[in-house]
Amino acid sequence: MWLVQDADTRIYILGTMHALPPRTEWATGPVADAIAAADELVMELSPAEVEKAGDEFKQLARRSAPLAIADRLSGQPLAGYRALEDRGARWDGDKLDDWALVILMGQHAARKAELSTADGVETGLTRKFKAAGKPVAGLETAQGQLMLFETLDDATQRALLVRAAAGADKAPAEVANMTAAWRRGDVAALERIVNEDVDAVPAARKALIADRNRRWSAWAARRMDRPGTVLMAVGAGHMVGDDGVPALLAAKGFEVRRVQ
Image (cartoon, rainbow, N blue to C red; front, side, top):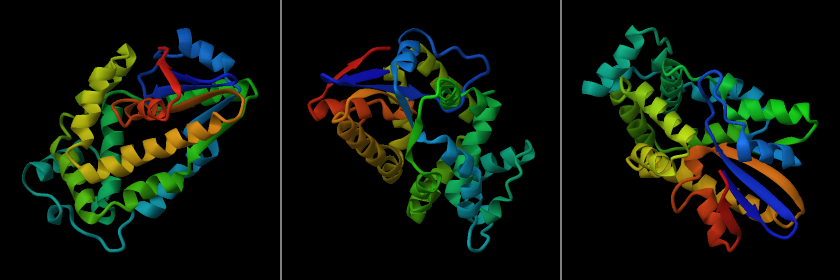
């Protein structure tokens, strides 16, 4: 967690994990203090948009015409995908876009690693702020977030699918490793994991990480013009590196320091 502040405004920027093991304790120490101090919570999606996400996914994920998985994947990636099917994954993949299958495989890996969004940071924060009667808002819409994937060019979508399918057997362990790094507050390890995942597909990194970081840091810069205390909670992968949200705000001349 980082703090951006001036004379009358404080924005705590918390890097989150959307899914965590049950009974993970994260709302302690400076994080608990930030939750208590904040007048409002801002996340990637508001609670209302989270509720829309499933329906939006169903509408956007379907292909205009089916395309067999065997016509998209071959060799190890195809074997990796078939292994998921053999272990119970039933996605009717021929009818889904490449990006949608990537998301479903990621969710499958999280479940295998025994992580749940019900135990994730955003769910916990929403519950705490609603109980305190504090407002909860979002930076994006569910449709807009999914359109980031939907509008990736075909080659980028296919590259993401090939990479996800080829590494499907290792994905649960990799998700668990990222979760462990987050729990330790190991920013260097998080940066290495995130970069290994997204640097292999530069167009995806730009759309899913870098461009969003710029938009969110611009939002935070504008919010600094109004007094108050805000807790801004977005995925931990957006905190790291020279194009992470804290670094971008520091580059704009704001005082930014890590507080947890």
